[in-house]
Image (cartoon, rainbow, N blue to C red; front, side, top):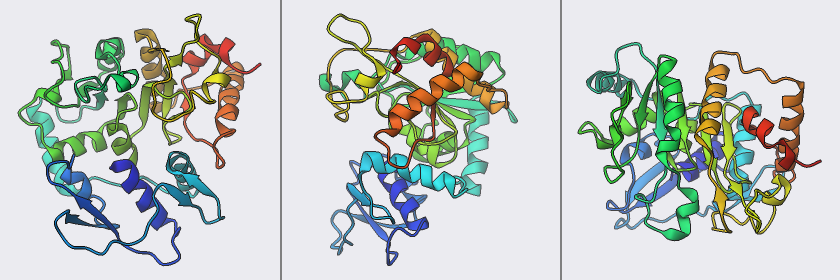
Length: 336
């Protein structure tokens, strides 16, 4: 939901439509993920129940037409929209309301996070979300994130684990809040946490998009498929690796192309990111937030290589970057 609504709002703000119109979201109460999130899009949409007789405006959200006449499928369009948005010097699309900020800070205190402390949010997609073996390749083991969690807490931060009560409980970890199992869990607090965090740590699950719309940097591990990446220049990511018949990772060039570049479809075995790789990602994000994330000349060469590979398929370019330590470790998979 956040992805489609964010794209529509950005297009409205950037005058994509000859005559601006208000989007209409038709929802079913039972299937709506977060009603509070919908309220943040009030400047651009109207919301109605699926029982309401409403004349819907014509809008193709799958094949998006850009002002220069280019038509992109929604997956590629989202990358391009963020690129154009940031090139125009625009800030975050969404910002927390004063009410949510006030209530959120009070709730943080109840969760055990002292006033003035910073926190990161953690969301790791698992099979409890969708018991579907065909989508297992998109899941990850939250325990592989514990080393990175410790790096955050050792740096003085707190970690708030997002999710639903069906997820396995976390062990007791210092300065970690298992909010997914908290009685304080609510729709509005979900949004506050995703919008007020210092950064988001997770997978390619939907919550990262919400954080990104609020301007929160994303550290995305276990990104999949390999051809996808988060959208903003604030974001850093590392990917799962597709494995060949010999059990070794295939080249980045091959991983960018069919059949691997076939959307969110299981195309064979993948290698998840290791605890060290995820930790290196978080270390780089913390360096970036402190203004210390420097790339040496060789890092720049590797980053330019993966960027050039991505931009073969992204007409407007890309903004996020792949983790520098990950690229150092897997340099041999880059194009020669």
